[in-house]
Length: 323
Image (cartoon, rainbow, N blue to C red; front, side, top):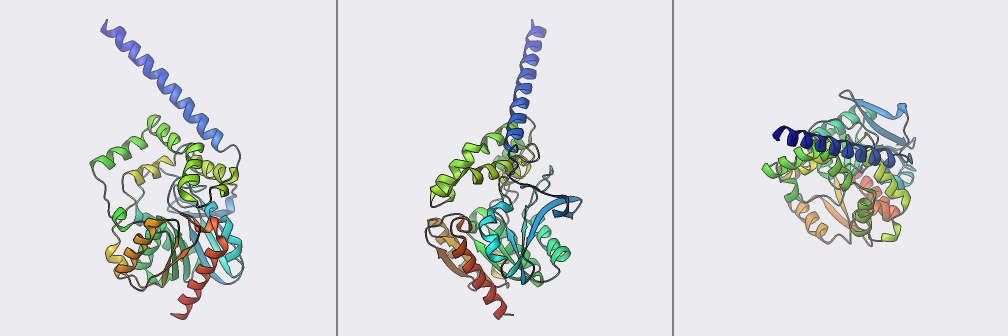
C-alpha cells in the first residue's frame, strides 16, 4: 500500500512538473514573439566573459551614459523618448545592464558593487574619458558609488527618483534569503517569476504606479517590458531573486557624505515620498541640487522627455563650470 501511494505521489509530481514546465515555456516563448528588442552582434561589450548590450547614438560632443532602473523587465528602451534629444549635443551610450534586456542573465548573486565595476570598466574600455551619467531608480546608488569609488571617470551625474537610503540599507536576512532561494528554483521559482512579470501585471504597474498619465501606457511600451523580462528563457529570475534577497542593496551613507562628483536629483512631482527621499540624500551631501518635473511620476524621461533633457543639459553645463 505504501509503495502504491509513493508511486501515485511520484506520478502526480511528475505530471505537475511537466505542466509547470509547459506553462513556463509557453510564457517565455510568447513574451518574446513580437521581437521588440532587436540586437546585433556588434552591439555587445564583452565583460568578464559576459555580453553586455549597448547602443551609441550621436557622433559629437561629450559622452553621456544612461542607466535604466534595476529590474528584470527594464532595458535601455526606458530611454527611447530622450535619446534623440540628448544625442543632438552628446555621444549617448545606453546599456542593458547585466540580468536585463538583451544582456546576459547568468545564474549568480547580483550585487550593487558588481554593477559599479561594470560601469567603471565600460567607461575605461569603451569611452576613455570623463563621462556624465544619468541614472534612474535603483541605479542611482550604483552610479553614486561608482563616482565615490573613482571620481576620475565622471564629469557629473543626474539621479532620477533615487531610492530611499533606508531601503538601500536593508541587508539579507533569513526571510529574504528564503525568498531568493525560492525564486531561483527551477519550475516553481520560474513560475512565480512569470506570474510577477505577466504582461497584465506589468501593465498594472505602469498604469497605477509608474506614470502620472495612464493614457501614455501603450501596447508597444508594455510588450517591450514584457519581452525584456522573458528574454533568456526565464533567467531574469536570478536578478529578481537577488533583488528580493536584498543583495543589490548597499548602505551608501558614508559614500554619499564624501561624494565629490557634481550631481543633481530630478524627481517626478507626483512621487510624494520622493521629495522626502531626495531631501535625505541632500542632508548627507549639501552639494546636491534638487528639481522636480510637474505632472510626472517614476519615469519623467518617458512622460516629459523634453523637460527632463533640459534639466540634464543644465547639470552637464554646471558640471563643466566646476572643473
